[in-house]
Length: 128
Image 1 (tube, rainbow, N blue to C red):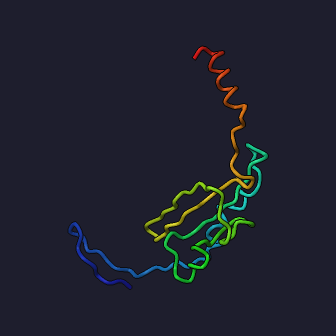
Image 2: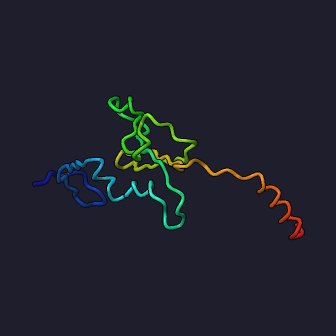
Image 3: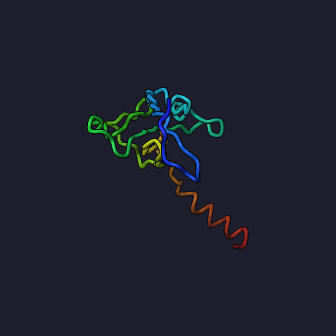
C-alpha cells in the first residue's frame, strides 16, 4: 500500500509510511562499554576515570538529576566531577545532544617541584 507523492525529476514518488524505533537507553549504551573507563587501561595500570553522560536539554522529569542518565558507580548525579574534560555527543538526525564528562578517579596529576629544576637542567644540557 502506498500513496502517490510529488513528482521529482519527472519521476513519481510514493509515500510508504512511517517508521518508529523504540529502545531503552541501557541497551543503546551497552556496546560502548562505558564501565571500562572505571578500570585501569592496558596503556596505564594506574589511571581510571569517573564519568557522567547527560542530556544537554533534559526533559523536565530529569532536572533533579541534572539530565545525567548514565554514570560511573561512584559518580552519580549528586557528585560534582573534579575539573572534568567534557565532549559533546551530537546526532542531529535523532535529536541527540549529550555531554560526556570524564575525570581521573585519583584526581588530576600534579607536576612535582623537581620538574622545573629538571626541565631547566635539561635545557641547559642540550644547549637550548
